[in-house]
Image (cartoon, rainbow, N blue to C red; front, top):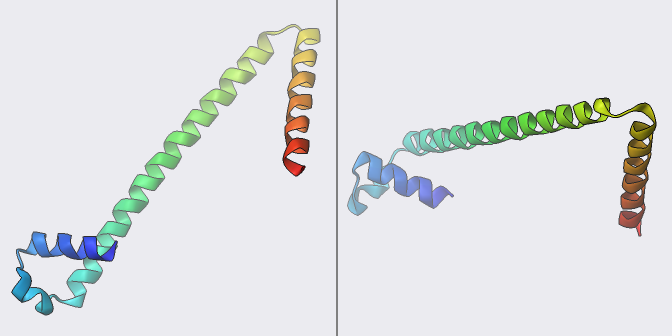
Length: 93
């Protein structure tokens, strides 16, 4: 990643190959900080989107369960619970 950022800094500042040695550590540090900030912003946006999707899915499932009559709801919950217990047991083996 550092060579890519270094190349970006060289292109952005217009420095040629002969002037590479004169590149200030401050510029490199600033470029790395900017790149890190961009990565963090993108990761935060992705995390927010995934969280919103999960919350909407949970609300949808809850609404569907609430719409069922009590006996059917109990059967569905029991089935889902047994399926999840089976998955956990299979992972342990």
